[in-house]
Structure formats: C-alpha cells, structure tokens
Length: 156
Picture 1 (spheres, rainbow, N blue to C red):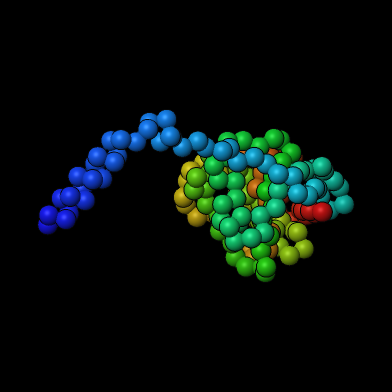
Picture 2 (cartoon, rainbow, N blue to C red):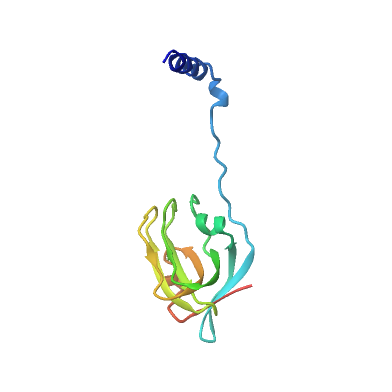
C-alpha cells in the first residue's frame, strides 16, 4: 500500500513539473497524393475524365481511407483495391466530408452507389453486389456527372 501511495505522489509531482510548451501535440494534416488517373464511362461515352486518384491498396490504407481529411478538390477521389470480388461495406467513421461511394466489380463496372454518405456516421453502407474496387468522390459528384450503376471506371 505504501508503494502505491509513493508511486501516485511521484506521478503527481512529475506531471506538475512538465514544461507546458513541450506538452503540446501538433497535428499534421493528411494531404492528397495523386497516384493515378481515372475516367468514368457510360457505355462508350466519356462521363468524367482526368480524375486525380489516390490509391488505397494495403490493409492500413483501406481501413483509413479518407478519414480525418477536411476536403478534396472536385476531380479527386480515392480508389480502394481489394484482392478479390466480395460483398463490401464501408462506413464514415472519422470521415469529415460527405462522400459518394461507388462499388465496382473486377471489370470496373459499377454495381452500386451510396450517394452523399453522412460524415462521421458509423452505419454500414453495403454494396448491392460483389465488388473488387471502391471509388470515393466528393458527395454530389454522382449526381453532377450522372454516374449510375452499370457505368465503368478505368484507373491507370
């Protein structure tokens, strides 16, 4: 018991002696990194071209996605790459901006779209079919560019 009291007192004294200037945490903003370019097609017609794409293809990158980011430019997006097609579900935990989430199969064909997903919402947002890729764009982009199920996404 005496050792616990001494330990608690030592911790209290050390905490009180900290230099207030060195006890701050500085946040480094997460910035967009262009890694590829993308385009979206409706049959043979080009809907959107010259999308700047950041790729999430590792477990950490896929899990983190666009979390903690405050904004993206109009023609920026994140392309999530999985090893195989499967039912997918995303959520908006720690995501500060509204997003359109586009699920695509192994050929890049859009299988389902979640429009204007609410920031910070932890509800599951599942695909309507198996997907190997997911493209996240600013909320409202699918309506602006008329992106629909069965359109195709090409990332190069």
